[in-house]
Each structure stands twice: as C-alpha cells, then as structure tokens.
Image (cartoon, rainbow, N blue to C red; front, side):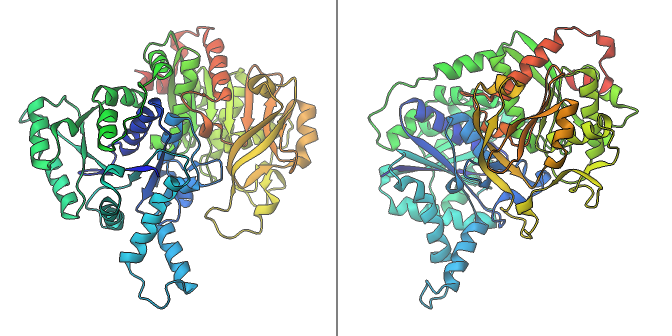
Length: 551
C-alpha cells in the first residue's frame, strides 16, 4: 500500500501549495521513490473546462483528455510523468457521483448527507491512486485555504483518514504565511498560529508546517511556531521567495523537507537525492549566454496564469538554447494595421496564443501578417494556427472575406469550420476534442526537421478545424499541411515553406513540455529567434511598448 501526504493551506490563497507539493515530490522521486500528486478543488464546477481563464488561469489537459487545474501542469513539468483524470477531483465531480448513486438506489433508502456519503466519496478518490501498486507515495493537494466553507468536507475527509490510516502511512503538511511588517520591522507568526489553530479545531493536526516568507526565519521564530503549533522545531520549514519556481526543490532540499517526511513515514530504504540534471537546467536558467525577446499575442494577458504552460515552455526551451527568453505581452485587442509596427518592432519571434471567441481576433490576424511579411519567426498554437490560415487566405489567396465560423457563423468562406462531430453537441463541459491524438508528419518539412519522426502524439482542446476544402489552394500558394491525422484528415500542422520559420499547430505542445524533455517545437522556435536576433537591429527601432516591458 502507498503512503499518503496531504498538503493544506492557510491564511491566504496563492501561497504556492502546488509548487511545494511538486517540489517535495521531485525530491522523493530523486531518492528513488515512485510518487504521484493529485489536486482536490473545492469549487462546484465538475472541472475547470468551462471556466474563463480570468477566473482560474489556464485549463490543463491530460493525455487521457481530462480538463484539469493548472497545478497538474506543475506536477508533470517537475516529475516528468503524465497525470490523468484521477489526479484532479472537484466538489462538483464528488457531488455528481453521489447524486447519481442516490438516483440509482445505491444507498438503500438512507438519507444522503455530507457525512458520511460525501466524505466517503472524497476518501475513496483520495486513496484511489495508491491502490494501483504503481506508487510508493501519493501527495494530495487540497485547494483553497483552511476555514473556507467549501473546503470543510475535504478537511473532514483528511481528518478521518488521519485517524483510519496507520500513523506511519499518513502525513499532513500545512503551508502558511509568515508576513513581514515594515513598520514594526518584524516577522509575525500569529497568522500561522491562527491558521493551525483553525486546523486543529477541525480535528486535523499538521505534522509539518511550511512557512512562506519574504525574509529568513531565524531559530527563535521557528521554535516559537513549533511551540504554539505543536510540532517539532525541525518540522518548521522555511519557504523563502525564489527567483524561479524551479529553485524551490533545491531550497526544500536544504531545509531537509524530504528527510523529515521520510522519517515521519518510516521509510528507511532510499537513495541519495540525485538532482544533477535539475541543477544543470537551473544553472542554465540562472546564467544564460544570450537573450531573445518573444511577443506573446493573447487575449488574457492581464493574468499570467492564463498562459502558464506556454511561459514555462519558454523557460525549458531557453535552457536548451542557453538563452534567456524575455516574453513581451501584447494584447491582441490593441493591435491595428496602423500601430502594428509600433507594437511589434524589436521582437525576435512572435507567438499567437490559443483562446476562444471573437474578441481580439483581428489583432491576431494583423500580427500574423506582420510576422509573415517581416520574415519574423512565427509560432501559432490552436487558435493561433487558425488565425494564420485566415490571414494567408485573405492576404495571399485574396479571399478577403475568409473567416472562421466561430467568429462569423454565416461566413461565405469558412476557412476554419467546426469539426463535424462537434456540430450536434449542445453540452459545453468536457465535449471538445480532448487529449492525445496521433499525427503523421511529412518528410522534408519544417515539422519533420523539428520532430525527426513521421509519427507523433499531441494533446488537443478545440472544436474548430482547418477546412480541407481549401487545402489544395493553400498548398499551391505555399502554405502546406505538414502534419495530418490520418484517420480523420484533420490538419494538425501548417507551415510556409518559403519562410525561415513559420509554423502553426492545431494541438497544444505547451502541455507536454517538461524540465527533462523540453518540447521540440519550442526549442526550435527559440533557436530560430536566436538566429533572427543575431541581426542586431538598432535599439532605436524597438517600440516603446516592448522597451517598457523589458526595462
């Protein structure tokens, strides 16, 4: 049987429970243990698939087609293993299961209640991954903070498991905040004490307290927290601000978090932590030889988490290319034909990001035209590829009214159209083309040069596709389909063979990029941007928009 670690949070949200959980998992993995992480979210949505990116950041998609919390992206990037539907559970999914069972008569006429029926279902799912004999340790992150009304059933389930499981098979790790008050010039432990007190009032007693802080915790503060929170002093862990999330495992190693966990779980057989590759990666991130500036054209740039996987993929690819990738956010709604030079001059590459809906679409199309005409390295993802196709149709094929039926349902030239199997679907949640699908790549293309194989598998999340009625016309004019799904005929990759680097993909490569395996398209895109950057354009042509973001 696997052992279980539960990660809770207090005082405030956004402290980084996902990063701490992933860092601990990485350390345990580096010691030879088989580890997985799961996330339990307290919101009533069945999954985050229907949530606006402004609400909850990006929606991460797993190999098996689950729309999940963005923290699962951190889990995969740190551990270099795939997660699945079972790794992300919401209150909505829990209640949906219990209500369906009640309708089927599974409860034999009993009154269905939060305790025991909801908590039993939560516990069943918490233990599920540990029953497959695939993992030594299952880490469960509980979303939200202790004290939230919606989190109470999850905390109660953890309380019951802490009582039911053998003591050496269950560990509670609580992440909290130790704020620094400038006026008093002091670190304050009271928020942590109150958070743990609230946990204890709910019957859950943490074994380890991880303290997020902007300033180092001295021994006196650690002893104070340990005394009033009823843990050993060695179990009070400092989690100071880091320059990059990839530094956190190293910081946790110095704090001996993994050793404390192993001792508490009575695990005596483990290796020395081997983080050689991780440290090499981190060294390149910290000390790059060169730099490139990439423009990210998006609709949700106000919230960085909306493009979290893309931004992390740039870090991975930058490490391979020994360069720092500066990402300049450009809102597509603010791009016009009149100001595009002002907005985009000075970039070394352009990425048009995925998204849904008509807002900001014309700005994306104008940005694509800029990259195509200026021979600027271009990379389009999902909607970005579709906008590249529309731009090519309008400005090269002279189909001036080319559009997508997503933006204009009655367009006379639907270069992008809804997939046939999607046209009869009315339910929104979990009904898109989701998860991993095969793609065949043509030889002597940019895509083949990138992947160096004829067959790949990539993750999808879309309803619209390139309309193959226009394919021959496109290819005759120089934009070719270099990657296609053989079973459906779906165009997966489009590129312009006369351009130094111009590629659009229908899938989401950013979802598969990890520290140990950076995605090859991102790697080659940054390599092309380095080549373009070597032209050393005069500083005077760098737009004020870009210069202000780089300063």
